[in-house]
Length: 149
Length: 149
Image (cartoon, rainbow over all chains, first blue to last red):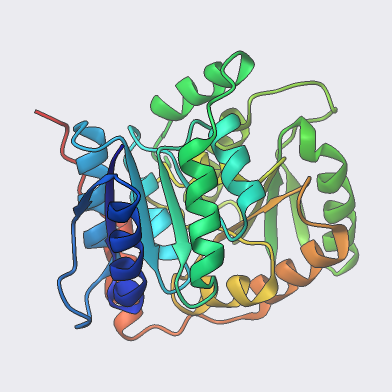
């Protein structure tokens, strides 16, 4: 599978570990940065990852920051992407079954390496359940955002 | 505090419990639905809650669905809102300190009532840390979304 990965500085070391592991599993990994642990802004990397997935350049994405919260918000600004912030595999499974999530977000300061791997394994192997869930996913691709009067 | 709450059918019972509890605590609660446990689509209620918060009609929001994933994606489609999906109070605290989150999402099928209350208490009482985090939050309000070529 083609998998893109992006982070902020807080998750730089976890990104390196997960990238190497995903490549060892035989996946084609696109590391979208950052290239060092110097301080960066997570929205920049979240938007870059979302754009990459929306363009079809990878099949799935992995988004990492300290808590996973900031970068998951950034990725979900893009209506072509569905990013699930998780800390255990059951949520990773549900995000695929019900939400057809194409990006998984994890918090490097909250979730350890083995739990992160277990979440990603489940995320990559669980199919979308379709059916009534498809209608809801379609609504996520066409958001209704009315500006306040 | 003025607090809006919305859910899907899977979280209808949790919404009722949390609404009553928040009102008992003295908050002004706006229940944006649904009004029964009949099947609905979570994006509809996520967009409604986001619009309500963006319009300044409540100070904070609580978004609930089965896993919390679907409705958190929907709420985060609105660039005026920052929705943090959490399952424990440390994440709720970090979402306020670092991300100035104005909506908290919880999964009714994954997080029990006492843990949900603890997350919401922390979410309501933790201040934003400002400083370098403000620049990142500003970027979440002005997303860069280029359509694929």
